Image (cartoon, rainbow, N blue to C red; front, side, top):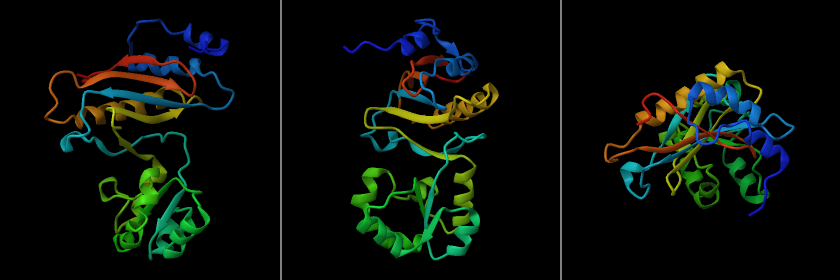
Length: 229
């Protein structure tokens, strides 16, 4: 097994091994564990007692972080409401010609697609290309809507999507190392409260097996919070 570097070991030494921190303690400590020179992202990872093969346990949805997560979302709006989308803050706007650009030029200089329902026929043809990249818009996440201006504005303000993977894990970026403690606490509370609320009724016993906060290439800080189980 590859030995961790000195920076990682120094960061790890700040974490009391075996301790389960409070949410507030974890947010205060996490910024001290960054091992990179840039403004590291801070992620939360959940290990859930769910079986995503069961339809009612495929946890997926959206939430709005009160302070955003520090990431700038580049939005591609596929719609005939082009002026409305531009005024709302979309980075790229267009119709079928934008989809052709993706196919022909392998163009992916965007992070999320929002669309009006009338464009889903064209988008549906690109399911095999957009689906595996997690870029296919979906009414359940609010990225397919007639009110495209509202969808764009919400994303710009901090609306993010969460989704459990096939192993029952869920990862979400909640901020940056440059965030102050209060902003991290606010964001993390929203995430934790949301995950608790979407617990499937069919799950028996412990729902959240494990939850940890970590920076890019940094060690994990395990924590607990009110309502966890």
